[in-house]
Length: 557
Ligand SMILES: *[C@@H]1O[C@H](CO)[C@@H](O)[C@H](O)[C@H]1NC(C)=O
Ligand SMILES: *[C@@H]1O[C@H](CO)[C@@H](O)[C@H](O)[C@H]1NC(C)=O
Ligand SMILES: *[C@@H]1O[C@H](CO)[C@@H](O)[C@H](O)[C@H]1NC(C)=O
Ligand SMILES: *[C@@H]1O[C@H](CO)[C@@H](O)[C@H](O)[C@H]1NC(C)=O
Ligand SMILES: *[C@@H]1O[C@H](CO)[C@@H](O)[C@H](O)[C@H]1NC(C)=O
Ligand SMILES: *[C@@H]1O[C@H](CO)[C@@H](O)[C@H](O)[C@H]1NC(C)=O
Ligand SMILES: *[C@@H]1O[C@H](CO)[C@@H](O)[C@H](O)[C@H]1NC(C)=O
Ligand SMILES: *[C@@H]1O[C@H](CO)[C@@H](O)[C@H](O)[C@H]1NC(C)=O
Ligand SMILES: *[C@@H]1O[C@H](CO)[C@@H](O)[C@H](O)[C@H]1NC(C)=O
Image (cartoon, rainbow, N blue to C red; front, side, top):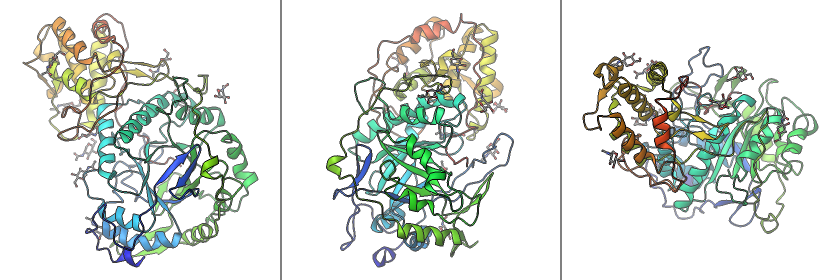
């Protein structure tokens, strides 16, 4: 404690431990349990640690998802202010929902590490920085965003896990989006492995009916290849569980979920808990969660939330911060959680030696309540998408850095024009139910839009007016000018973009159009040329794109 507070905010140097401070232990997964380096079972005693961003109340935003975020790990003064309270709570982990990879996190991360506090980092950002539950895609810009965040945090020894999504799937008819979550987990896992990182790959699920929740959990940890490989499996399943309200009991609130996950194959925890419908919160659920009643299945949980957080149900939060940001006032929720965490003594069993290694079962069958295919989207391929964009005859040239707010409108408009011209937007679309992914569906939405604009431009015999799109498009004089040559170049660019491969960090900044870090794919020869050629003959309906409206990154509780 003294050592942490003597650390001047902003001066902590990552990787250099102050003498006398024991390094935080590495946590690894054996089978379905977590262990510290000394072989003790590790239970997450966590708290959500992120101030809520701006929430625009809108019929299109029924779950009050924020449109901005405040990075909770970038302000050493604020972390220093909060550290004594986190220590009073007795937490060993915080969960952060969105961080900014271009900011410096040394002070907060070092201070928390010295205090024995791990970080569970969600990789998503609000609006267009997450897997969209209504129109999911797994694209170069998202992969690069995730990689940049991992790169920014990989130097810290206390990152426990990276979550690839939070509540992306929220209903049976949206379970097809799980194919994109699983693809993200696969690529993030491969990237972490390539960096020799032991951080776990996680997902945090909304609670729901067992008919789709169980297959979703099993799907995220299954092996589609049937060879017991964990390459596409998450390590850490999080359930945002608010079943225990007031002074409930294990039988009344948790017996069901304990039974549901009894045979689960990877580590699981409650990525959020803390029902607010019967205030004040007593947090007596901690006594069940962190006990031998639930330790066979669960490895602890994260109480929601340290900071105030508004939801449709009411106010979460255990402290209030003074308007000048200087002081913390705790509520009875805080004191109750502190008491419960203080008393928790989950068993140190099974031993790591008897935990076994994880098995990765076959994936659940699709049925009417679970509709995700076990054919996953390919690894987003930046080199292929950049090559494509350079060869497109009409390019999206945004005049406004805020273009994500109208990109979806332009895509829909472009696709409706292509539809009227007798083509389709299948190349930019993917379908997580059929497991079919268009050749351009892994590219940045800006490249998708350039592709759509180009298809329309070519379909109208290179009429310059057709590339205008209200001033959003520019003719690319370097591109092949006839449709045949353009399609040949495009299919050649995309030929390698169907397989999976180990992603690499983008070079020279973020964004879908810069850098060339991604390597060629290892996939089978693909049908890009067919897809592109067919765009002219298929009578397809315009695919409706909504970019960044319903993003799976904030709790919907
Ligand atoms: C990250 O921080 C930088 C520097 O303050 C800022 O320019 C950028 O907009 C931030 N990124 C996001 C996604 O908020
Ligand atoms: C999915 O089901 C919900 C109700 O659970 C409904 O509100 C929504 O419109 C459905 N979405 C689609 C695309 O059918
Ligand atoms: C779909 O399969 C899951 C098991 O994967 C099962 O729990 C669920 O009940 C099934 N749904 C229907 C409608 O049969
Ligand atoms: C950091 O947090 C402190 C305490 O809330 C606040 O006074 C300060 O303005 C913050 N700094 C930045 C750069 O946001
Ligand atoms: C255009 O496509 C061709 C064929 O794939 C490729 O060799 C070339 O590098 C591309 N042009 C640019 C500028 O990327
Ligand atoms: C971006 O666009 C949105 C929606 O049109 C608007 O609310 C927001 O103020 C814009 N932001 C900037 C920085 O222009
Ligand atoms: C989100 O859109 C903005 C423009 O509105 C862009 O600058 C940013 O790179 C996009 N983020 C991602 C992850 O695609
Ligand atoms: C995916 O394909 C199925 C079967 O053709 C179709 O019913 C469904 O609407 C498609 N889903 C999307 C998101 O396009
Ligand atoms: C670009 O498209 C948007 C959305 O349709 C439109 O509002 C805007 O006026 C267009 N032109 C420019 C120069 O941004």
